[in-house]
Length: 184
Image (cartoon, rainbow, N blue to C red; front, side, top):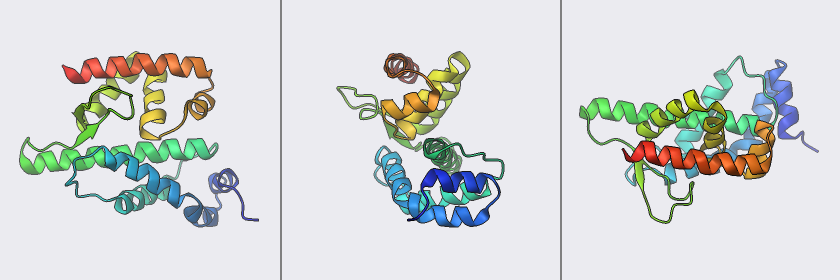
């Protein structure tokens, strides 16, 4: 029976580089789903594809020398953050190329259960999350876990060490704050 993801992550954290190679096929499908989720919120003519986003993220994960993986949830949280960073960097580069136009768009309607579709630039969302982190770091992490890493309420509660009720309450508050910030 092959080792589970958490076991391999702990081995990798302990310095076993072969664990990273064993881990790749076990997490690839989930990383592809995560990348697809990210890219489904992007503009239709986006130049990155799911496989490219996964490969770039995995290369950065393998280079992430100081990682002390706790478990599977932690790994996918960091993976989501790295994918977000790649997309933000990609959007910033595109803006530089176009000298101010054509920012990458993220659609938040699915992730925050809005009745109508609203699109926001990925850069503006990233900036708003940094501002939210200054006001309430827990809510900012919660948004990263729910929206970017695609975690359930249960997994988010576990990752943050809080109750499901607190996750639901903070999720509503964070969504409202982000919508207000992004609509200005």
